Amino acid sequence: MPLLCVLISSNLAASTADPMILSDKRILEEMEQGSIIIEPFRRECLGTNSYDVHLGKHLATYRDRVLDAKLHNEVVPFEIPKDGFVLQPNTLYLGVTQEYTETHLHVPFLEGKSSTGRLGIDIHATAGKGDVGFCNTWTLEISCTQPVKVYTGMPIGQLIYFVVEGEIETFYNTKLNAKYNKPSTRPVESMMWKNVF
Image (tube, rainbow, N blue to C red):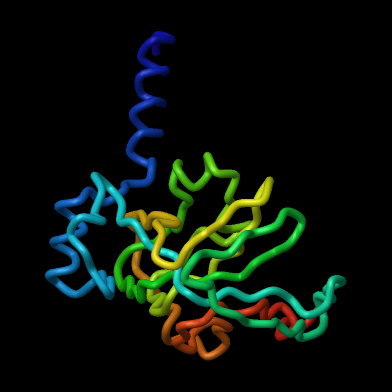
């Protein structure tokens, strides 16, 4: 087979394996069918292929400066004042989205908005991906590169939805050992201590 045909064939194969992201119209269709739930939902927050989520009023920091992965590290919760709260570098803040979401057929991803990133705010350390069947608010792992004031209700991130290939054997909300299934309007601390290692 000529080299050009091989390259075209391999590119086509790669493109069919690429993940598919739901468009704005498709997100609305899935919401009508009940496979995606966003509460509260505001039409103006729907982007071309994403939905903007907002910072809830609850933040938390860990009580101890040194954390232990084998122990239940306690957090100190507090509310963001009406005039805002200044995040400090070198501190991990746990935040929460105002939005409660359910995703029953797709893989939800939470990403930071470009405007958030340009303020030096990172909203998740590693956990941007949700699972099919995740039904809850989103805990945010917030850090910043320099002091920055944040406010309740500010746009903090965006949800995008990927098509999942293949049948689901166990949805997240039916897993008996799922660590973050309990509905919460407050940020949830790490449950690493529940693992056996």
